[in-house]
Length: 104
Image 1 (cartoon, one colour):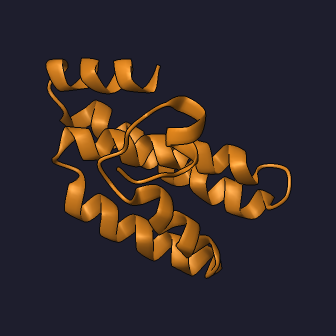
Image 2: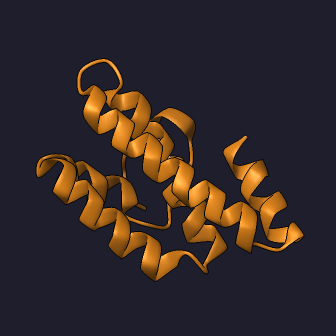
Image 3: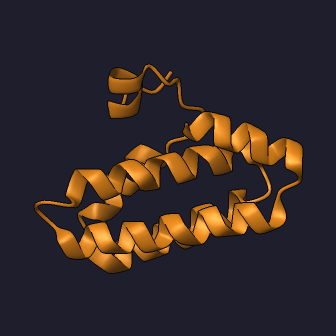
């Protein structure tokens, strides 16, 4: 099990290293976040369990940075919206219900 903020605060046991990946990307700014997002999304968009973790991490990164790094928070919000919209347009009803339940 990977110990991260989502595990500690929400009790969610993550399958991925997305939190750690984006935390590292934060150190490289917008280009690091953009690159990390593109790699993660392109590789895992068709895996519902990984996609839901990606969307969850993006959402929490918005809140992590909204007061101190608004430009970074805005980028995370854009990527969250992008991934969420893709999910709504491409997942079947059953997978969407899984995603919505996870994010709720």
